[in-house]
Length: 245
Image: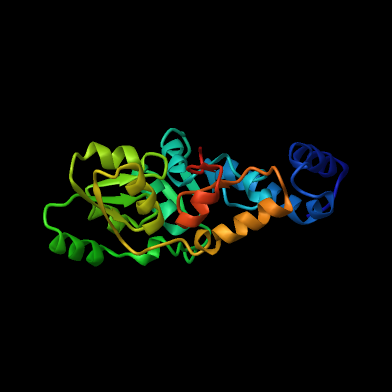
């Protein structure tokens, strides 16, 4: 692409709003990609959904809609775009398609997976139903479409307690995250939560001992934890909540 004064001016204008999160040194690398993506989005009437975990050049430079996995799918259903590109893992793209069946939904990498979502399959859910007949199944939104199809209701980390309570059942099967299930069980001691032994390989790496170490090294810090973290981490945290919270 031939460099012109006009192109340089456009690049500078594009960089200005995001220079606080992308070093100027990196802009010559990211700039041409962002320009190409901008053009492609105009041509295809497309929007890009980016999960909160994405890198700064994607989250701040490319995305039209950002948020947690379910929020992305819901917001996508409100757009007039013909094409939805999901910068996230596979189950997020499936969720976007479920809520936008008439639109083209693309994912840049079909191998983008989630250790939590892959920890359970549809046959696993059917076996749980055989073992616990009549017990409702609540699946976390971080699951595949086939697992959701076998469940009674879906829940997010922010509404899991409310969803489980609303079922008015003495027993509830909660899949697949055992730590989120444990968190729900503590909030609802009157309900027996039957948990699957799944977990997120990233959240599981944190420990309560680490948190205590952080506090010793940085007195006065505030620690936020997602309920997908192990119980000892949640006990040490100042605040436990969903990504949006």
